Length: 179
Image 1 (spheres, rainbow, N blue to C red):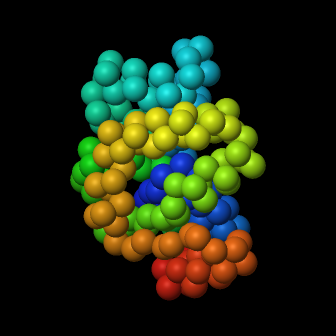
Image 2 (image 1 turned 90 degrees about the vertical axis):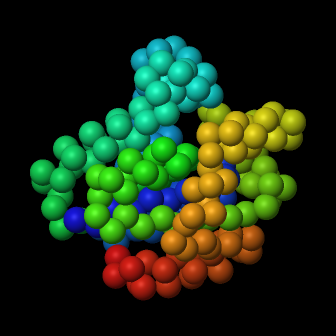
Image 3 (image 1 turned 120 degrees about the vertical axis):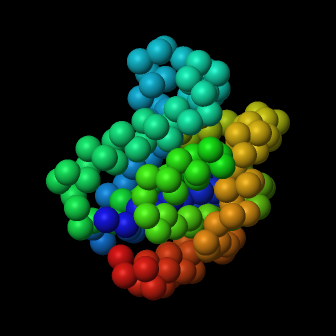
């Protein structure tokens, strides 16, 4: 089984990759969804939960929860590609590399102003309409180590054009990866 991670700052376009890969039969495991599930159980914001989980259980906790979920999927999905969406730290990269042979990292890049406009439209719970709050979220992501993950990626795709161009780039990448 092949496992691939996707990284990128909020609003960069990770979910478009996941959606297109899902349509081609890949299984998507979202680290953000794992955090959101935990936040709901705890009655906290996702920001609080992301920080508190790491404080309480160490930097590897989110990757441990993700690996546990993937190991459960492996039992029934041996031939499918599994995509881990939303890697944010070197701790996570190291854990995935230890657990999954030939682990591949794809990162998506888009400039902050464009990402902010996308998040205003998306309006997910942790998306802000305030640019200062958006910048704080970016700094939190950078403090987790997302910049290191992006710099160590096997491939980076720039998503600063229209959706048709971006989807074409993703389609070509998925073709190259035989997905």
